[in-house]
Length: 252
Ligand SMILES: Nc1ncnc2c1ncn2[C@@H]1O[C@H](COP(=O)(O)OP(=O)(O)O)[C@@H](O)[C@H]1O
Ligand SMILES: [Mg+2]
Image (cartoon, rainbow, N blue to C red):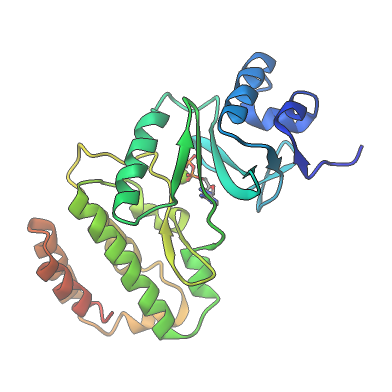
């Protein structure tokens, strides 16, 4: 049988591909409920495309708690994030509410709507940050993107939302074709912790030495001690001044 590229929600009940909605199980009762939920979000087609594969089906992404598929709503493409059945019961509602907070400071994919176990959001066509940097040589472009990214993290700090996984930024920061960074995945985010977005991101990118090729060398020259010192000052008292001083030390 030919592998379908797109399916209407109702067809998910008759094609094997439907079971990606109940990944990693194959549960027909839950599938029926989830197909109704997909329809309630206004999704008219699910498209099987993207870099990941599960059950021999292509997806936009697969995380530890969710799978992400491309979904069409009245002619527009979105990302539909669907809770995996083996994920512990962290709340989709909290994730969606926190996305709203992030969106209020122009961070994260735009939230469209959500149900108990799915979130419909803006689709991000882009590359994971390290992959993006690796494919690049223009230092100014890289610098500009890193600067924008740190500003996004700063706005999250200021609005009191801790992303929670920016110390694993390679999975959660994508760079769009127009060189705009996007912070993904608010599934571990919280308004009940002291935000550490700027410090997690900078530790990850500049202290742990994950940066590839030329860019790492560029950042061995500025004074590492000075960066650490200013990072500590920012952590103690986050402010625009402390941020500017940090950005200066980083040579951005
Ligand atoms: N809005 C989106 N547009 C395109 N791809 C996305 C989007 N959101 C997530 N993805 C892809 O799906 C993967 C898993 O999503 P993520 O939100 O991290 O799920 P989890 O909560 O399970 O960790 C991401 O690493 C990314 O590759
Ligand atoms: Mg994730």
